[in-house]
Image 1: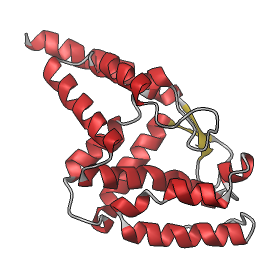
Image 2: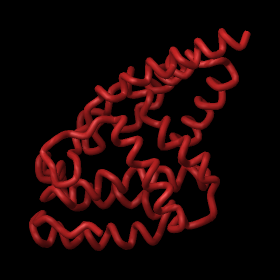
Image 3: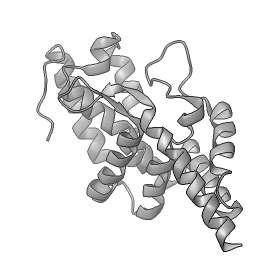
Length: 199
């Protein structure tokens, strides 16, 4: 029984290696190279550890870490939907649920249930942990765009109002982070996407 469980877990570990091949539209800080989903997930996990004190309320850090590490695994099957895509909704949870059930279903049943539940909690965005995880998930590409002369905002001609409407979800998880980012976004648009100092 233990061997079967181990083999399932190792099969899952091999499967999620494919996340390294899922390219995102955003680029690394001060770079022309596109980020992949695995890099994104690792960076979010580090951001959770470093920025946890700025959450609006006390949160279960381990649960937030699980959320940011697993939330994009479904993109192995469903692909990455660009946040500012005007032809496809960024909320494609039906397609992603099928992906979650297949990929997490590789794991032993108890782990599969846990990971699917954590993924769903993140997607619903109602718990304190999900709000903070979503704030961090939204924060990273914003910082990248700020470091890259507007990044995807400039490349895809994204309006100020659209950026703000997509970004203000940060406020629900961290008012402090949102105050900082809103100011930086305002400055960047006022300067015509001139690179701003990201601290």
